[in-house]
Every structure is written in structure tokens, then in C-alpha cells.
Length: 199
Image (cartoon, rainbow, N blue to C red; front, side, top):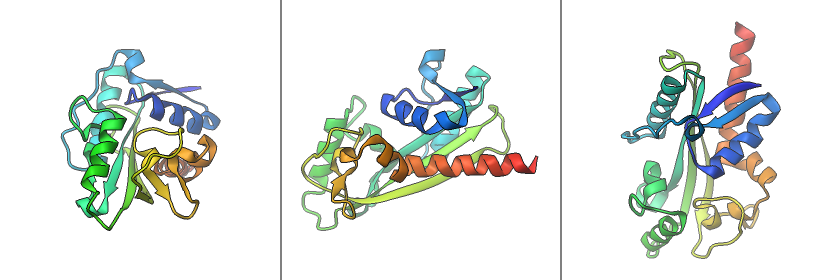
């Protein structure tokens, strides 16, 4: 098993990454277990924040590091909350408060379309000049009432018209096949395999 630091302490993300990476023999270790403090996320794009987090985790641990920066973009709100999704309702934000703010801001909007974004960055070292970078999205609409108990974040309100379900109503296996994070990780693995074949 190859050790890989996950530059996050989010329990939901850790569970998803462990499940998605298990077939590829990666041991995913959350940065908190290694005493790594969270990195600053000062940037306006998902990719820049993910890169900063990956380099920080690798610098402190001396191990390869994987970071994601993800969030939800509501089209009627000029793609807010975007990179601020996790703290949309303030520094002491939680999922319930974030969702309530999003629903409130969309209350007078006819366009409820939105998309999740996931930017994944994998670095072999803190100064890796050629990090693997992947960005993917998952499209749906925001509904007013929470449905489902799986998932986390905005999942109970992120409705998928083609399935007539929210992301939180999907079982984990189904979600991992469809989600922005699942898409991004599969693409990252594909890029890893391509890179390995060229060595």
C-alpha cells in the first residue's frame, strides 16, 4: 500500500476517497492524523486552492499528497457560493446553515440550476513541478426541501432530474459513479496510469 496524505479532515470526503482509492492500493491518511494544520485557501479558483493545500500537506509530511477543492455553484447567483461553499454562512458554518443561506438566496430566483465542481491535485512532493490536476463538474438543480440521508454538504438539496433523486438519496456506490469527486478521481487515476506507461 502506498501512503497518500489527504489534505482534508472532512469525514465525508475521507470516506469517499478511501472507497474510491482502495482498488488502487492507496492508504489514504487524513492530514489531521499526522498533525498537519489546514492550509490557507486564499484563492478565487478551485484549482489554485487545491494546489496550495496539496503542497502544504506534502511539505509538512514528506509524503505524496492529494487535495481537492470542491463546492457548489448556483447559476443564478453568479456561481456562488463557489470556493466559499464550506464556509458560506460564516467561519463557524455547518451544513445546515450553509444550505439555509443558499435556499434563502435562491428564494426569488426562477433559475435553480447549479453544478458541483471538484478540482483534484496530486503532488509527489511539495515542490513537484508537474502536479496532476483534474477538474470536473456535476449538474443538477437546487430544491427547497432536503431529501435523503446519505452524503453531506449540499447533497440533500442537490436534485438530479434524470434520476428524480437528490445526491443524498443515492447509495454511496451509485454516488461515486456519478459525482464530481468520483469523476475527478477516475480521471486522476487515468492520468496516473498514462503517466506511468510513459516512464
